[in-house]
Picture 1 (cartoon, rainbow, N blue to C red):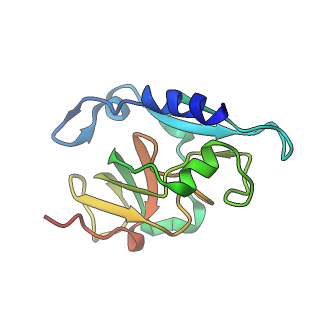
Picture 2: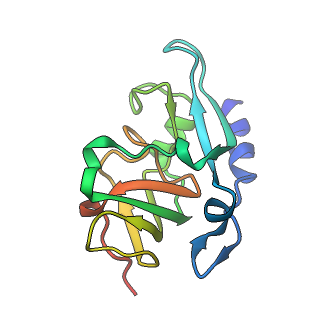
Length: 153
């Protein structure tokens, strides 16, 4: 039952219209949309909903420092681990609030890493995204540049 509700929430997820691959919503209104899974406490059931957030809510992890890259997400897959997170199964996620999505692809919006500039296409898999860090089921994501290979052409 919870899985069906989560999938209905996910089906309403729509990336914003883009111009030149940039996240127009984030640039013009300062918001982004994400599928977020929340638990009131460790014993409470997980609740998955699609919400709009101010851009300032995007976690930029302190450890990323001069390697932080913000990406306008265009693609993310739904896989087994994401299904476990969305349905609240124990063992995958330790936080009470997380954006699932263990992978994503998109366009760099901002980068402190000299390897990337706005407009570069990148892909991200692994490194705890969607498990320990907010994942790719969002219109914006933050990552370390060293974890982002360029998207193959």
